[in-house]
Image (cartoon, rainbow, N blue to C red; front, side, top):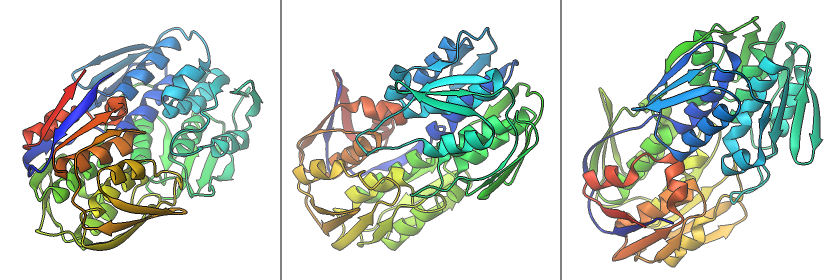
Length: 419
C-alpha cells in the first residue's frame, strides 16, 4: 500500500491546470447506458473511481476505451442488470446506474450502498423518485430490485432531511428521459455536475428544462442517441488548491477553474483575507500574511460544498482566533479532526460543528486518511507543518485527485509517494 511523505513549510507558487470533474463524469458515464449509439466524453480525469465505473459498464456489456482523458463508450450486448455489492461498496456513485438501467432494460438490480466513514447515506430519495415514475421496487438481500414495463412521467418532490440530493436527481432525471409523458422534479439538485449531465442528455436527444434551478422538467422521448460531450472542470479540486495556496502563503493561478462554480468558496476565502483574482482562463489566488478566522456552514449548491469542509477546517487551524465549521450535509463527516489534532491542531467537535482555535503551529506526524476529502485535508496540513508528515491509506486520494503529487511538486511542494 502506498503512502505520501510531505516535508512542510514551502510556499506554493506558479500555475497548475484543473482536471475534469469526477462528480460530473460518473453520472454521465452511467447515462451512456440509455443509448445504443456511441458516446465520446472529453476532459475525463484519470482516477480510480472512473476506472471502477468503466469496469461496471464493461460488466454490463458496454465497450469502453479510455485514452488521454477521453472516454469512448460503444454499445454492446447487455450481459445483465446488476451492479454488485463489490462495485457499490468501493464507489457509492455506482448507484447512479439504477435509473438508466431501469429506463433502458425495464429492470435493474443494484446493491444498497450502506454506510461509510462519513456516516450513512441512504438512497431513499432515489427510490422515492423512481417509484413516482411507476417503478416496482423491492429490497431483497441487500439489493434494490426495480422493475417497470413502462415508466410514466410524474410530479415529485425530492427534498430530504439535508436538502436536495445530486445522485438522486441524476438517477431520476436520466430515468425520466425515456419515461412516457412529462416529469417535474421539485427541490432537484442544481449543482454544476447536474447541469453538465443534463447538457449531455440534451445532446443525446432528451427534452429537459430548468436544470439550472431547483425545478427540473423532463419530457420523455422514445429513444436517445449518441453524443460527444466535455466534462466541466472539477470545482472541488480547484477549491482544494485554492485553500492550499492560502495556507502556504502562496501565489498560484489555477487554470480551467470556473469562478461561477466557486462563489461560496471565494466568498469565505476573501473573508479570511485571501486575494482572489478572476483570470481569462482561471483563478489567481494570492495569500496575505495572516489568515482571519471565519465561520462556515456547508449547504447544497450554491452554498459552501461539503466536499471542501475538511480542507477549510485545516486552513482555519492557522487563523488567529476561533472559527466554527458546521456540517449540514453529512453531520458525521469529521473523521479528519482527530488526525489534525495529532499534528498539533486545537479542534473540539460539538454535535455538527467543529470549533477551531488558532493559530496553531502544526508539526509533521504519521496520520491515516479515512476518506477522500479527509485525505486532502491532511495533505494541506502537511504542506504547512514543521517536519515530515506521513500519510497512509492514500488510495482515497487517487479516487478524486489526478496526479496530486505532480501538481503540488510543480508549485514547489516537497511531496513524494512511496510504496
